[in-house]
Image (tube, rainbow, N blue to C red; front, side, top):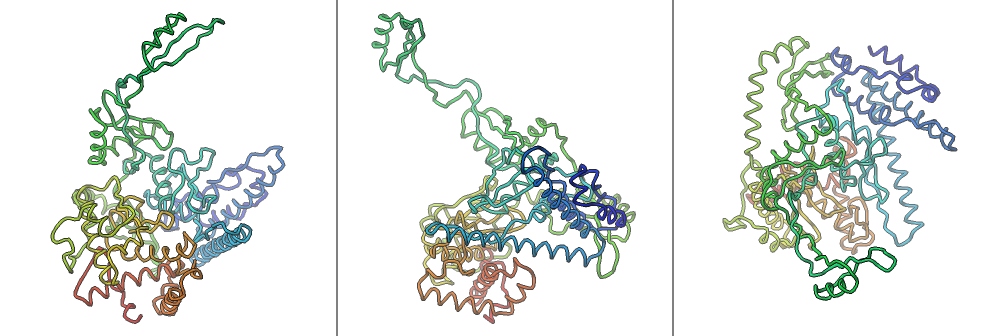
Length: 620
C-alpha cells in the first residue's frame, strides 16, 4: 500500500498538474485502509489529512483565462501543490526518519517566512518614521492549524472532512488573525478577525463541527440574541404629516409639530392629516433567536416570553438547552444529518520501542485526560473486548458527564493556606474593583453563577497573595489600571490560559484556568514594560522597547535575562522546542514557580495562583 502511494507521488509532475484536473494527476490515498492495516499510525493519518487539506486539495486551481496573470497563477498553484504532494509522500513513507526530516524542514521554512515578514516590518518602520509597526512573534502554520482542528473535532482516519473555514492569516494591520474560506464567501457569518490564534482556531473548529452535523458543537454567545415577536408597540411622536396634491398634481407632504396647524394647512390645500407614530422597540413578546454562522439565517428557539430580560435570563441559565435547540434549527435548515458518533472506537499507533503496531480502545472525548482504555496486539482482540465492555464504558461515561455538569469550575485542586484576605466574606465585583483597580472583569456567557463567585473568591485571594510576595500594593496588580481579567470568556482549547497583548487582558479558561494566574500576570508585566517602551504588542524579555526604559530598569532586566538565559533550565527548555525555549515562556514558568517557592517558604499555598514548584528556581 505504501509502495503504491510512493509510485503515485513519483508520477506527479508540475506539468501534469497544470494540464490535468487535480483528481486525475494525483489520486488521494485511502488513509482508512492504511491505518486499519497498521501501515501508518492514527497520528500520521491525521497529519496526512491536514497536509492534504492545507497544501493540496484545500486550494482551488485557478481557472484558465485570457488575463495577463492567468498562466503565472496556474504555474504557482501547480508548484505549490506539487510541493505539498511531495511533503505528503514523506509523511506517509513509512520511514520515521524521512517523516521527521520533512517536518524539521517545514519548521525551518516557517522560521524563514517569519524572518522575511519581520524584515519587511523593519523596512516599514524605516520608511515611515513615527508610525508603529509591530514585529510578528510567530506565523500560523496552515498544516499545524488544520491538524489542531482535526484533532479537536475527533477526526478518525478516512473521515470525510469539509472545512468551511480552512485558512488563517495575519491581517493587513499585523495585529489580528483573519479566518478565511477556500472560496469567495470570506468568513461567512463567523467572527472574522481575532486577537489570538487560539480564538481563530476555535472559530474554524466550530465551522467544521457545524458542517458535519456535530451535536457536541458549542455555539458562541454572539450566535444568540433576543428578538421581538408579535405586534410592535407604537407611540405618538407629537408630529403630524399632511399629504396633499401640488398644482402639478404630484403628491407632497409637510410635517407639523401640532395638530391644529396641520389641520389648517390640510383645509386650505385639500390635504389629509396623519398622526405620525414611532416605535417603542417593544413587542407583544420576545423570543431567543439563533443565527446560523454558515448562512446568516435566523431561527427562533425556546418559548415566547413577556420581556427581553426573561429571555436573556433563560439564555444565561439554560445554555446547554439553548445550544441544543440552536443546533437542531441550524441542521434542519442546511439539511445536515445530526451525527451520533460512537463514544468509543479502535485506534492504531506505532510502538517504536517494541517495533510493532498497537491497537487501542479510545474514548472520543476531549475532556477526558485518559482516553485510552486498553491496548491490544490485534484489531480483532480490540473489537471483541469493546463489544463485551461497551455497556460498562457507556455507564461510566454517563456518570462522569453528570459529575462534570455539577462541577464548579475555577476551584483549584488542593486547599489554599494563607491569610484570610476577605474576612470570611464572598468577594463582590465592587470589592474586586476597589481593591485592585482592574480596567474590567469579564465572564463568559457559559459560566454559571457558582463559577463566577468561585472565580472572584479565588482570584481575589491569589492576587492578594502575589502582592504580598512581591511587596507591592494590591492596586499594583492591575498594572496602573491598564490590565483586564476574563474568566472563561475569550477562547479555550488546550491552553489553560493566555494573555492578549492587543487587548491587554488575561483570560483564564473555564476548565483549566486555575493555577495559571501568576504565569499570565508575568506575560502581562513583560508586555507592560515593552508597551511603555513604545512597542505595544512586544515583550521586554525579547528586547522590545528596552532602550526607551529608565537606566535602572534596563539594568535590572539585563541582570535577570543573563541569569535566566544561562541557566540549565533555559537550556533544557530550548532543547524541547521553539515554544518552550522562548525567553517569554521560560520567564513566565520560572516566575510562577518562584511565587510558589516563596509562599511555601512562608508556610502558605495558593493553588489558584501557581500550579507547582520548579526545582530549578532555588538555583536561580
